[in-house]
Amino acid sequence: MSLYTVQSEKNDTMGIITLTGYINENAGKEMITICEDFLNNDEKMIVLDMSGVHLINSMGIASIIHILNRIMEHQGKLFVVTPSEIIKKTLQLMGLEKYLKITDNLAEVTRTAASD
Amino acid sequence: MQFIIKMDMMTDGEFRLSVPFLNGAEVVAYGFIQEVCRLFGVSEPIRDEISFALVEAVLNAIRHSRSEERRVYIAVEYKNQEVRIIVRDHGEGFNVSGTLTEVSKQVDPLQRKGWGLFLIQSLMDETRILSSDRGTQITLVKKIK
Image 1 (spheres, chains in turn blue, brown):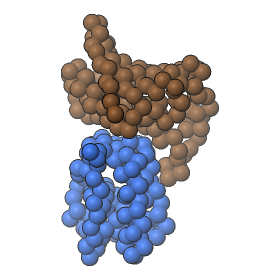
Image 2 (spheres, rainbow over the protein chains, first blue to last red):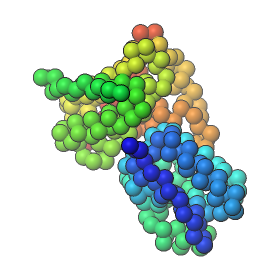
Image 3 (cartoon, chains in turn purple, cyan):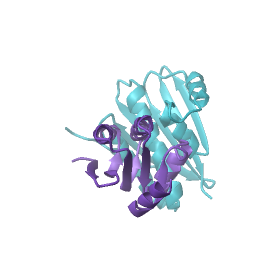
Image 4 (spheres, each protein chain N blue to C red):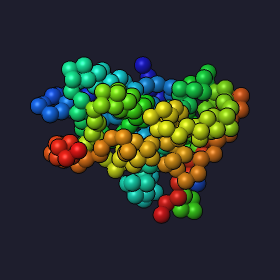
């Protein structure tokens, strides 16, 4: 039984990676693969929907950082949508809030991206 | 494959769990500490901080201890408004001061390594590590406000 799910979709404005469960090293690898696909197809606005994630370990966070570095190399942006309080705190403790944007929902992603 | 969890509550209010070096063992530890902290009346935000730190401590033992026994031992107690957790392995030990120095020197979050130890120290109020060639013991303390 898998401890997580990683799904992706693309709309007109962004690529969305939807995560659930426990984001470990294996989930991180899948995230990275999807992100590379998005970037190779010139999709530079990428969203991690973490509303269904209850646990992430340091390897999962390292994968987010890897994705962030790749997106920044392409002058893109990474949004994290609806992380739990503990995950939000973890991202803040790691100092990542200045590099990615945390929002409460996808509509806010679109509004934030439009205003930047 | 048999996944053996040894769990018991000591009569003095301490809970113990030992888990094998198996994929997902840290998830069992996560569930364990969540329930123990709930029993102690720890609020959800604090419970989650403790749980995340414990997951990292267990993963560090699994990844780095090189324990032939291949088990991690966890003991939790609530005393004097503190949750105190001890995570032990019987592995080869490591250079604690060197590692802590290395972790503290890394400033750029996008280049940082050793995330696990950094997270543990950030989420807990006290972290103490003792390590020798007979194993490593990490003590995690969280004050319950």
